[in-house]
Length: 319
Ligand code: 45D
Image 1: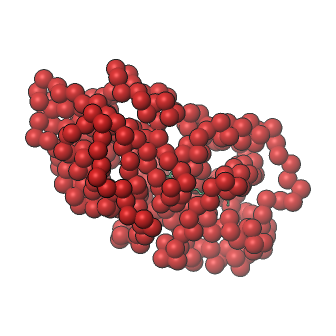
Image 2: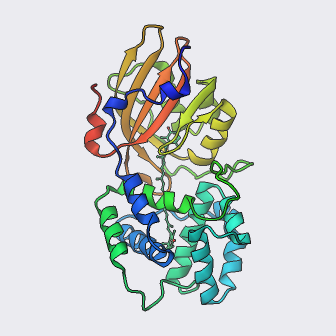
Image 3: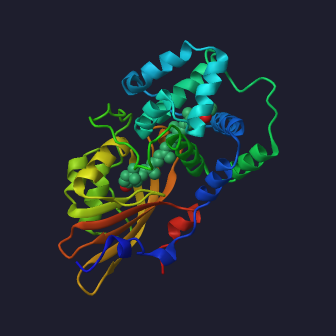
């Protein structure tokens, strides 16, 4: 096929609306470390008034357990320092181990630390802490986002903590991590208004069953998957490792799409819909777009997943 990953990245670019998420994270990044920790505490507490994450199972916590036990033994000052060092990406043994956690283990670690903070077993935000103007600005920016965007901001800040020798792609577990058990069966009988392309329908079905082998078989060997705000992940093996780590338990609910046949017989499709993460289940529907480039043999050469800027963008299926 006459396409490169670079050219594939630009498909349907005229239908895309810039997301407010990177700008919000850029504001967060400018805070000093104590303000960052306080901001996350307030943002998480505020989200928690209406929406609560699922408690990660013991199996998922096992990877973080050693570190959590070590932190529980520390004095309050030492605990605060560990959190500062993680947020500052300082080179410490804990910072290095943390950086090697998968995304879900990083989230499980902070979930548990948050619980321990509530129980008074880990140092909370310092009692005399005064919210700075900067924190207020970032908090207001976060309040303007929809819940799906808010949890994405929280997730991305957590992913960036810890110490890495060099800028490296995020880590995937070497062995399969325990699954998030599906509480309800995933939605079945998927229909997408405007889309009949088998590769797209099979892709959605496979993800809804956590059948990553079936999903991978839909890609060309040199195919690429580009997650939101990330570079493309190239090749079936790398895509498989990524999906097993990060796509478990998702409910994928596409609603509509458009499909265009290109002169060489390949197709480009844009699909929009809702995605639920097992962390928040049916409480949060994230507005998501998928941009597929499919070769003339019906295999996926490129697939980008985008966090949409707003629900209105779900309907942005015209060029
Ligand atoms: O620092 O088609 C405290 C792909 C205070 C695959 C705290 C996908 C101090 C292909 C509060 C304790 C995966 C790409 C911190 C589709 C402090 C595909 C704690 C997309 C940090 C569709 C904070 C999937 C805590 C998507 C505990 C879009 C924060 C998935 C917890 C998106 C935050 C999943 C949590 C998202 C956030 C999950 C649990 C956005 C979870 C977010």
